[in-house]
Length: 158
Image (tube, rainbow, N blue to C red; front, side, top):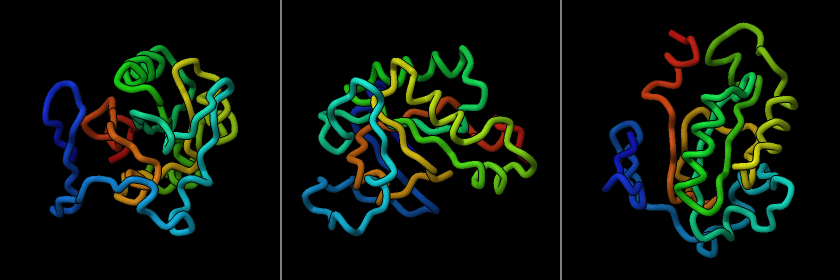
């Protein structure tokens, strides 16, 4: 559960499995070899700073199958909430585990399309289905945007 202090979404609290998590640590306080997440980030063309160097990082994730107007709208809204938009793209394996069956588009197609979107600063390969404290801390994510109440139901899962 993610709770925002105000509509500005500048400060938030995260509760995972009933446990309130501490705010993300600055990157300097992390062991650089500890987290795999920075190695999975790719910058969009024209972006010069990685998320952990940016002033205000906004994160959103998804499958991003057949990128459509609804996706475009939420990416635009997410970008408006900060100076760096990091977009997580779920792997084919993750989508098969969650939904079963075959993926509609390959990971490479979905990831490449996200990187080409004008609102995207960087993209995270093989984004986890559920946010972790390590992900938030190591990439210095300050805001998380979601377009759904339940990703599973919105994606056609049970």
